[in-house]
Length: 64
Length: 131
Image (tube, rainbow over all chains, first blue to last red):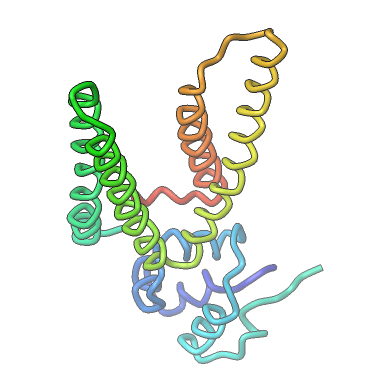
């Protein structure tokens, strides 16, 4: 699954640690999501969407 | 994991782990001078301290975030497969008189495979936080 978390985080000027703190997860989790090594659970994906004020499908793309 | 969280974990985990070591050491030291009742008492104390340590680890995992939990589950599943395979192989090698391996090797195989599988899953997810 592809995602735009890194770009959205960059737009906000947040570090991975900042985003991790806002989402109450570890920095490693943010890194794994951004690099596509880990797909977040549905609750975490909704939390990310809510934090960036965007629909979930505009952040996460199932890809091919 | 931040330093405060590491200390909180150590404050909870160390007493349980120290108790296991102390009880095991006392049990081994006094095993010849104790009767069946005393030895049973030590065995029960050892098992209870193990349950305490296990509960500390389990409750720590419940506090971790979802990636860490996934990492732990993958490491445990993989290490179970690896350790069971190695122990079965050693058991049959023993039964077929190809090797003479003591039963005492089993815990070392289990711990070794768990550590190796932890490293593998951490490498896979680039997860290097201590806890």
